[in-house]
Amino acid sequence: MAEIKEIVEDENKISTVVGDDIELRGRLVFKNSLKLKGFFEGKIESKGHLIIGQEATVSAEIKAGVVSVNGRSNGKIKAAQRIELFNKSVTNSDLITPELNIEKGAIFNGTCIMSEK
Image (cartoon, rainbow, N blue to C red):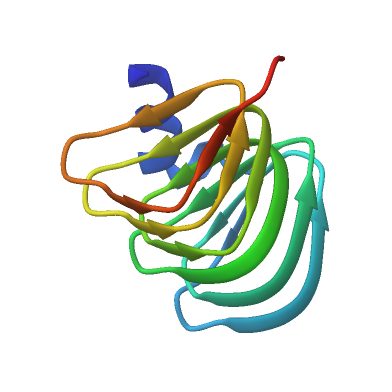
């Protein structure tokens, strides 16, 4: 898990970073890694790594390889590999994933279905 935290904190290792002054609505599709720091509403699709930054608010149906939540997330999240809910995150979502990591201090309201990889 230490490796993932390093990726989350070092934005130079992330393919794309969407700043905290950006507000987006619609369908977002990407391949590698993406960090959202602003507001997003809609649908997100990727086989890569989605990082929801501390400043971010995301209301979306999400399908990705790995989803790391540091900010606020609302909606359904389906991850092929794992979902990570970090300290101070607020997640009001239904989760589907083979692996779930919840740090102490994270808030999670919803259901979780543990699927096979």
